[in-house]
Amino acid sequence: MRKLVAVTSVFLVALGGATAMAAAPAEAYRAVNRPLQVVDESATYNPATGVVDFTLTFNQHPDFRTVDEQGRPATAFQYFIVGDDTAPDPERFDAIIRGVELQSKPRLLPIRYSSPPDPDPRSGGWGAIRATVPYELHGRVLTFSAPLDALSDHSIDGRFTYVLETYRFGALVETIVNESVVRA
Image (cartoon, rainbow, N blue to C red):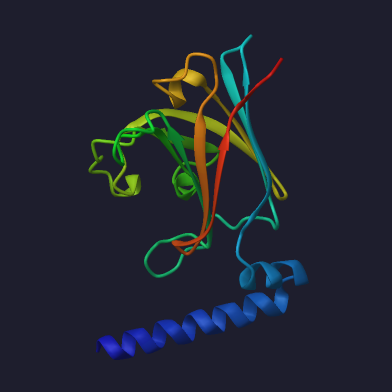
């Protein structure tokens, strides 16, 4: 019976994919066959407001809604906000921003503690939610803003290191290490 279910699922997915591709524009077809990558990104701290503005520009329109049979989105991203680089993982991270959770609450992006693990299956094994912020997605550009204290327990001046990763159905596509900048 399991074999039949698997074959039926594959057939339905293939049939659905063929139908969608027949009706979809060329850009949607290319997105299915090309991994999500970051073309440009920034994290800018504004000392006047105490807020960090994030901007992510992708090589294509991200597909955060389509999931595979294991519930992993077609495209996802994740920020690791480094707090104490001398600490072991996961304690070295002050916050985790999981783009995989965009599908759970429309237009809201959770920011999590790195540990201890939250029992909520949506946590991905990371800690409890420390803040939730709105985001905007316009074509290939995703933006969101978060208070510094929702991101870091260590930064007092808005400077922090972060790791940004992109994924395709849960598989790592790329890793970017960068630092926030402070608006003058």
